[in-house]
Image (cartoon, rainbow, N blue to C red; front, side):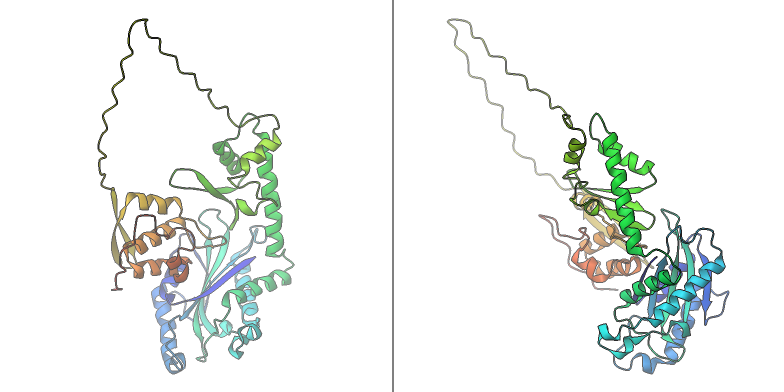
Length: 400
């Protein structure tokens, strides 16, 4: 089982997303009335926070007023579960989450524990859009019912430790052990696929055979349509080709050599043999006239094609005008971070386009809502927000 947690400033949006997701089911509503809309539920959380606003803003204004958590057990661990089983998992996880002591690492007494058990929160059950695997979304208030702030220092580690504790209590296999087993199995399957390619290596056949085994695959290409990397998907987990095997022998730069080692004496392709030029024969007594040089054409200055898209974020629409070459670069390199449960390639693409056009507020909103984070989106951490040669992002617009 894996779990992720982070504090966010968009608690209302996070709650609306978790409740309005297709096929979402309510698991538990804690310290709040049932039968209310997501907007009303968040309004009641906000009202509780305002009741203790002196504690909330004692030292500085508390911007991140919600805790967003995702808990994802493996498919095998939840086979045949009822809704009551998910309620029990949510309770066990929150109890373990509160019990994690991070005061030593965070160097502050407030990190000794949290108190989500006495806070307002909503737990929803989601189906993964690609694999269909079930996982929990928890949206909680930063303030408990007594007005004390739930500490957010090292909150991601708090979630991981809580997941490990629940896994241990239930005698489930630890996430690291499952990951290592998956890597070994995927590597074995990929080598078997290469071994069955007798005549030649083909990326198309390689991809088809990987999908036929029940895996997903995402292939990344550069602007010249050359494959630069790929990721194999198994359930909610993602495995880059660089971590498969011990010598990176399944990466795009080495996979052909691996195929050749499996098929000694064969070559991947035969290059056509160039035909020698036919010598020109000149009749005796005749002079070979010089051939006229082709007329040099003046280079035509091309106007780069542009793409105009309207990106809607929340209640605002952003008109983005972007060169086609830049758009293609972003689209080809829209890479989703590993082990991210709520981020999709289109979110990364939209964030990159908004940053290029200078709409920092819109890009930041998407990044926060989809798990990229402001720092990652601004730095181009995933390789999609870099400035292209000969281009320059527009001057950032002020948030409206």
